[in-house]
Image (cartoon, rainbow over all chains, first blue to last red; front, side, top):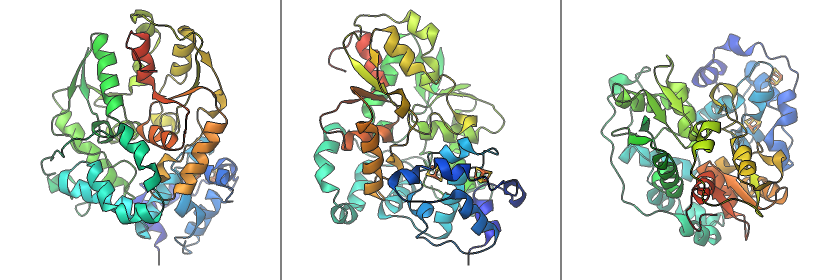
Length: 166
Length: 226
Ligand code: SF4
Ligand code: SF4
């Protein structure tokens, strides 16, 4: 069960901030996911969330939202839909191997060390057919050693639970 | 002018060319860039908890406090995250594109011009949206290209999404979105975002994809940056 309030809270909103949605669907008409020939509607996602119904990890926005903010730019209320999608991805734990490696790198060094992220994601990269692009990437990849950042002091962290992982 | 500099992770790795470009261009114009000491990753867009994400950049701002009042962040994601973390507007967080305005261009030492070259300026998403953190100079690439005699093509693609964010999640999505931009544009693509650069370059074939700083460096006299 996804708790509507929890998702909205993770996205940095309060429920009343989103009740202004007019249902005008301008967001749906400009959404980048449509360019993938996949029809989708941020407005419906908001509505489903509001009704307290579950949203599945297969929802096209949960899967393909690129975080382009076209919807936000077009929305009369500047509603930040990509941030709601990111909160949903968090709750649904949809992180790809790549995203996990990204966070893993932050846990170790406090920075993204690209060779580590790529190595960690190797099985995924092979399976998904990325290796043919490797030559291209090597053309401009910079090779350097990782740099470790000093620990974040957990007391700096306002919610006291997450975010103190560095 | 002295600036605090926040390169961010990709500029220390795959976008090292952009890092060198920004440093060189600004240093040539007499600016001094000093890295924020012990900076950490800004979290990019990988955290669904907004508070958690903002805390990464708040730590960076703490590290800058007392040392710098103006901070330059070239990566669009870093720039956006830093700006959002600066809730009380304590710092002036700037994107390099906002520095390359009329005053900068007219004081630039020009060696080469761009005559005979066709360029598609491509900004992508986060530099132009959302409103609160978008750059203010939204025609800076076009202004530069036309001022130095280059031809501008395909202005309509400038704010389309290349899908860079999805490149390691759903490759087909990035491939399709990037190819749309490549097909609808002409000449050399000029970008600023490391992720756009990676996405477009991955699928660009023989088409050239350069950083805007490469273009500036060429005008200023460097060879082979176009
Ligand atoms: S940010 Fe996501 S939901 Fe909004 S227009 Fe872009 S792809 Fe669609
Ligand atoms: S554009 Fe904004 S107000 Fe209109 S339906 Fe979408 S989210 Fe609601």
